Structure formats: C-alpha cells, structure tokens
Image (tube, one colour):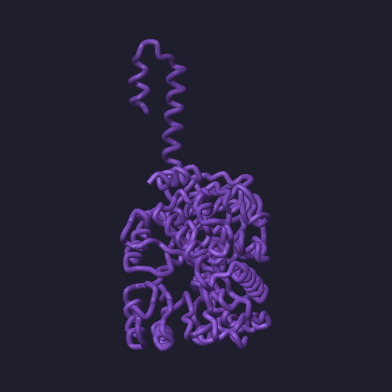
Length: 465
C-alpha cells in the first residue's frame, strides 16, 4: 500500500482526502481477502434441528472446520473463529443432510451421466447414497469423490445384482463373496438367486463379515431371509406373500409385482407376526413406497414425465420409464384395484413397522420409474407422511437411522460436534411441513458449501445437456 500512496501522491489534482479513502478501501479489501479461511464456516443465529431428539434449538451458531462440525451452541456462547465464512441463518433452519438408502449411480458407459446424477443427489440435500446394484467402476468413482476430484455424496457401494446368471450355485456364491469382499464393496446386492445359492452366500457373507441386502428370492421367502439375518429388505419385498401364504388359493397364483398377485388373499393379522420376526432379526427395511405407487397410479406416464425435475434426465431414460409403465399396466396379472390395494397395504405395513419400532431407513429407488435422483426423496417423504408418520419420524429415517444402520452412529446423521459437516439450510421448518425440505438456502456436503444460487447454476447446465 505504501507504493500506491507514493504513486498517487505525486499526481497533480489528487487530493489528500481521496488518498485516505483509497487507502482505507484498499486495506478493507485486503482484510476481506485474508479473513476467509477455506473450510471454515459459521452458520449464525440459526434454528437447529439436531435430529437426535425432536427439539428445536433457536438462536444457535454452528461452526464447521473442514468436513466436521466443530461447535454447536447458543449464539451468545459460541465464539466465531477468525477467518470463518459467515452464513446468515436468521429465520432459517439447519438440519443434517439426508440419506438415499436405495439409490443407483449410472455405470461406466456414460461418465457424464453418472456425474450429473451425483450432483442431483447433493443439490437436493442428499449427502449419503447407498448405491444398490453397482459395478467395479463405482469403487473408482467413490475414490474420486473422496479425493475431491468430483462433487458427490458419500457413497456406500453395493455389488452388482446377484442372480442365477452370475451366481448359479452354492460354490459360485461362496467364491463371489470373497471376490466382492476383496474388491472393496461395502455390501452384496441380493437379486433372484436360487435358494441353495442364497443359503451359501448368506453363510459365507457372515463368515467373511460383509452384509447382504436387497430383494428376497422367491424360493427363500420372508421368514428364512429374517432367520439368516439379511441386513436389509428393500421395497418391503415378500411381506405381502408372507401375509397371504396361509390362504388356500395362494399356492396356485403367481405372487406378481411385490405381491400384487396375492394381495387380495392376505391375512392382515399376520402383519404383526412379520414385524415381530423383523425386529427379532434386527433386519432393516427400506420401503421405497414410490417405486410401487408411481407404477400403480392412474396418472398417464406421458404426464408424469412433464414434472419439472424431469428436465434433468436423459430423454432415453424418460422414454424407458413411459414404456415400462405401459408394459406393467398391460400385464395379464395387472389389476388396477389390486394395485391400489397393494399401495394401501404397503402404507399400512410401514406405519405398523414404525409404531412397533422396527428399523426403517429412507430410500426411493432413484433413478427408477419416474424417480429423479434427489428430487424423488421428497416424493418418498411425502408418501411416508401420508402413510401416517410425522415429519420428524420421516426425517429420522433419512438422517439418524442410516448412520445406525451403517453402524457409524457417531459419524453423521445429527447436528452435533464431531459429526460430518453434511447439512441442509432451509427457509422453513420441515417439522411443520415435510415439503419445507425442498425450500433450501443451501447444502453442505463434506464441508463444502453449495449456496442455492450456485446449485441452480449447475442444475441449469445439466438441464441443457
């Protein structure tokens, strides 16, 4: 600054007052440059929804250092570190980031598509994704995300779908478990395995220490999957068949799509038994209500792909979704009344599971059947509220519960000191209305702050591809 003063001080007509103003402005600009320290943030005067209990903490400050929450407390008691980037939280609500516990990330055929889907998740506050039905490519992708090369949520990587095609029998199942474990996958995705292959896989997976989750093969059924402690059951698979299996006509019918073929035969009295077995096994459920409800709804698929978020999906995917719904509703075993009954039973089952404290984690199965990554989690949460859960109950399934499921309850899922800095800043209170989760002021993932204007800029780029 001395050189600047000397330079302009020698110019004719440049007053002392102007020199003082210039000097002051220059110093202020330098100070501002020096103030902001990368990775250091303070959400000030914000209302915190910590999610460890149903409390609302008003007038709080939350300090983030790098990728961790450093301090949480009343604004008048928390000292804001020098160099912190200030994020005004007045009138806003800060909650943990959400988890999509049954999501999909595209494979290696279209890397840009995969990157775009990763951003769609975080743009909607989804900061953790359990990627179901994966590929070795995803292990490389996870490493690139963790290294900060590309933006994305934390990813739990499942194997590819296990089926008779790639795991035909018990011997292959045991070999596959070791291959998956050594490759670095976090869990094994269960598909429509033969019964003997499933049994061998389950036995070896427990021996090695890698969880298995997803569907339940028809030969296995709900009871046996719970007996061998499958880590999670996704889509409420095989519960309808369990409730119908005592009916004399059940054996002569195809179960159909998630039990739609036998839903009229169920004994709702068996729902309690199914839930008790689930709790005893310690098995989680990821309901994905939207998977069935989108296909069962009377809304024309051509109308569904006109929803605003559909602009972020490739046209080929949208075309596939339209064809899939038409094909599903053209099946011989599709009956509109049975489909609607299936929706009702699944909602009743979810509510009963919650009331009996069966473990539940949030998931929507995106991008499948009109579920756009990130956006679909909002539809799913609204369906769960419609099923009878409170907004707080639903938010727990997407914040605290996933951390418990992953056996890392101290890592993320609540707004507390030491937790990962995965946060959503909202303009309204989601405990009053679950739709408020859509009203973001910004998202923080891995300690990186994405204000809403920056999110929208990136979304526009994706929409224009």
